[in-house]
Image 1 (tube, rainbow, N blue to C red):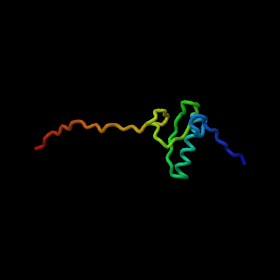
Image 2: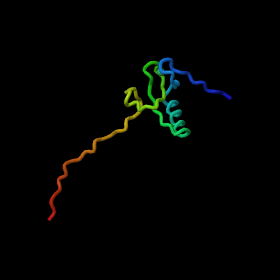
Image 3: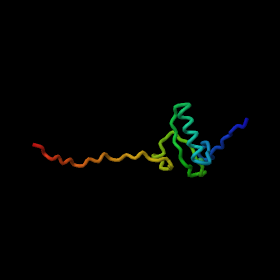
Image 4: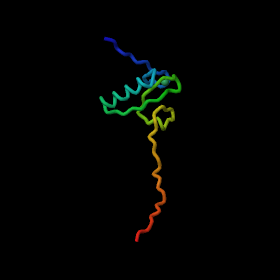
Length: 83
Ligand SMILES: [Zn+2]
């Protein structure tokens, strides 16, 4: 049995993932197993990938796609009057 011993980032003490794919899998797993939603971001200190509970959009260190929120564009409705 081979045990995966995660390395930890010296700066953030978070577990390091060397690629985004692996980090995403871990995030996905925690969501399934624990119901914890995690985000993946690339660390500016170690250059590896970490998981975070916070929405990285706040931290702006992100490879996570933003949920595109288009402002609900309302064209000024021009209703042809019916008679
Ligand atoms: Zn790091």
